[in-house]
Image (tube, rainbow, N blue to C red; front, side, top):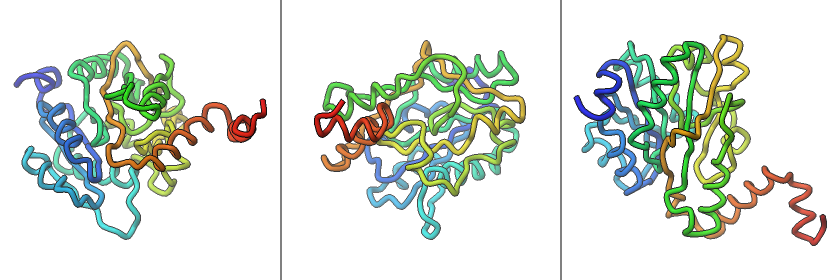
Length: 253
């Protein structure tokens, strides 16, 4: 075993990747986690050959159908069910979106934190935009992911979980829409679903460590200027509030 697998052993760590039409970004994502032995990819109706690419990587694949509607929470839950059915004794699972790459040092750092504190349910590091200077939208996403170090009140889709903790809260909440249930209003749907309050009821906490970067994300190359503009507006509204944003657009304070 080499890389990540040598850090955790073949039976301790699993991976769930979700995506839809991520193309080359999915290829980069899967390449960055190739050393994790137990991997599942969940596809939400891709038409770009994503399923075939994942299969060529030797990854177990779940293909979702509609109805019900595609959501990030539904995809993650489907992946967790598949992963834990195939490997029921896993201790930890890394969740990641298909447009992101895992930093080569992240898994070791995250596992060290989880193993050092048994009441720690999940950890996630600093997510960076792959090309932060390419556009204002990329820069906004990169800045929005710059969360403070310490105990987290929410956790999104790209995090390293303790399996026993995520089982306690019955995985992600599938009924809440992504627009109302995200860690940040950015390009990727970071469906929260696993609530800090639920974790606390079971005696768990969650933490972010900016000293350990978790990975990088590429703002969707298929996003149109209109979609990117909507992303920027959502992010600004989340930062300064919708009323102040409207006022500032019309020259107010």
